[in-house]
Length: 378
Ligand SMILES: *Cc1c(COP(=O)(O)O)cnc(C)c1O
View 1 (cartoon, rainbow, N blue to C red):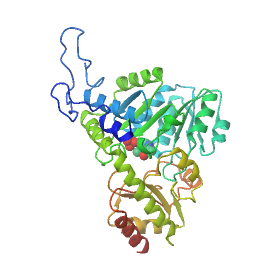
View 2 (cartoon, rainbow, N blue to C red):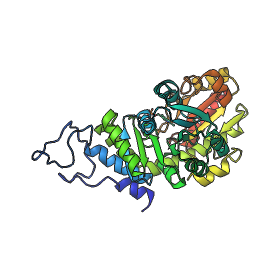
View 3 (spheres, rainbow, N blue to C red):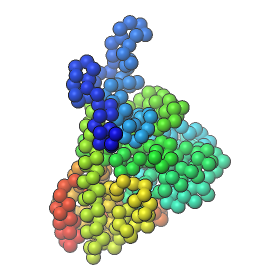
View 4 (cartoon, protein in one colour):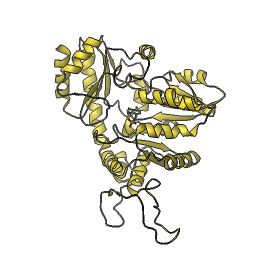
């Protein structure tokens, strides 16, 4: 079955009790038991909830995974995956991941004895060279936030597996529609469903999808033990969101290309970061690995003053953190999403004070381009 059919039907069976076509929000903390030890598969809502179960089935199917788990946020999902490693283990972390992911490693996991090194995974050889005898996991994000560099998932997976390390990919920027990392050899997929998967900027959530039964059993155990679960209402919202994922992503992709092409021609912009541009260093890899280029575009304005001018003069685009919703957002990575990354590291990565990031929504592309044009010329 095709992606859209799976998106609309997987997990979305009519409700067995009432026939409701839309999976109901099972807003309950517990479930009546028929007799001691006899129940309908649901005992307590941290452990299992029918609305969450429907969503878990849905996104697992979209990622081509046997197992899926929904969490209270993308960070909770990432943290649950990191419970697969223990004190003394080493993790190779992509050097340009989401700022919150870096902060989790740097400030929380390192205190618990988990060792990590940053690696520029855009060259798979760096992953090979970064391997240590105790490396148990390689955690990458592609394309990266906000510089849109692309990692070769197949190459990184082969290298990591040869060293016995499990490979995790944060697939938030692409969504399951534009990229399915498991098809390229990745073991575990993480999402912030807050972004494209829900797509309407009205829910915070996270997801873990994987095939390995033993690891899935542990992630499920962690989900229940720690309890950072997605609520029934949020599960309902994300389930509603994935039904339109294909049509939304196609429009994000079209608009993303249009905005990137416009910016690439603009005299006030010195650099555009978008894998869909032929000038992007990994354009060919992106074409091979992704089913499109998506709606995330970053560009260099040259200085903090110039960036400020754009950010303060846009009228249609909203100045805000986050991404992946139907409405276009504009942000300043150095002071917003990547404020937790030390200044020197930011400079090294190219997250300059003049860098501006746009999450291109699904409005009419001409209106978005006209707004950016007037802000750049202000
Ligand atoms: C937003 C984001 C996260 C964190 O997700 P939350 O839902 O905010 O906890 C992780 N990775 C990427 C790429 C993100 O954009």
